[in-house]
Length: 421
Image 1 (cartoon, rainbow, N blue to C red):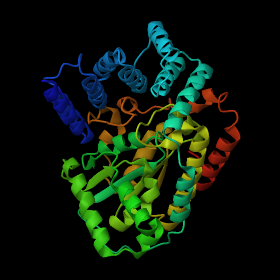
Image 2 (image 1 turned 90 degrees about the horizontal axis):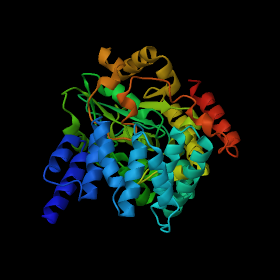
Image 3 (image 1 turned 90 degrees about the vertical axis):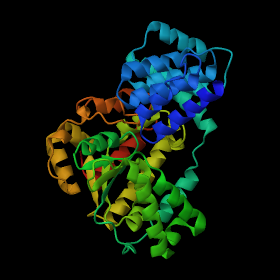
Image 4 (image 1 turned 180 degrees about the vertical axis):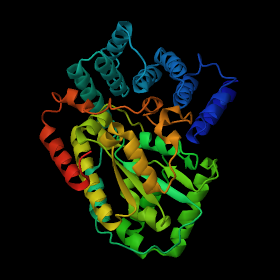
């Protein structure tokens, strides 16, 4: 029976990864969530993706109460990451007990991150930042950022020159890639465009990142990009379209790939899909850096666990987006998050025009779109467009005082390159 339950949970996680949270929940029909912590986690994630936050909170709370510290820490962080859960004094006391207990293991970082959210809700940013730093420092020790490798990749990509694609894009399809920094508003833009009756959303697809890694291993990213011919790009194109096919339910030409890190791979994408268009979402560096620092990314984005890593990553990102914008100005649309939430009607109208889409009233009420959202911003995009995230990083100025000058330089560079939002 236990084997059957584990298989059901495994099937559910596969369904969730494929963007099917309802199927994930159906897989749990015969599983007792009270005795299977992974099932509680899966249920929480699936309910969160569907916008059913009360049910997600209940599932995460069940996990947080698990006596196994590994599961408990995951439950507490998942609750905090939900952003809609309200915490009590008893919750704070329980977290403090876990943090200050005798067990100082690898899950302590998650507990600190969760405690930071409670202090944030209580309006005590200095205490929140102390826990953020403690949690992120522990996580960074477990998964360090290789800054040298990132800078070497950026330097290599900066050598790529303008090219003529070797393959033709499928003119019956119009891919739109949404790129930028994580936590910059890319999910909101995805939700806006996915609300259009002609546009299908996919997921944060890793295909282009994996193919970029292949190029790097074969003899250097830029060199292999330049030396490869039609056969490679045609193969990649078909492989990518095969991955996208299950997501295309509306029958239109347009589909989205919202993978922020694809800003690294714009040249590769245009080799594979010459008619691709890019929406580059730009957020204030301070707000964005704080937002990333407040979030735990379990499988990637190691740079985000140190403020220095975030600043370094931002520097490389700005250099690359300047380079791509010079090479491919007609394929890249720069959209400021602040402008979008400040004047949604104007900005959405302009965005639709760039994409070649007819106006649609649905795009102006993206919170009414009930499609599953699998990213950390799932709760935010269920709300009407608002400016609550503007200036959100300012409350952490005290903790960031040693970095404010460098972050200010990032803002100056961003405004110089892409204008002021």
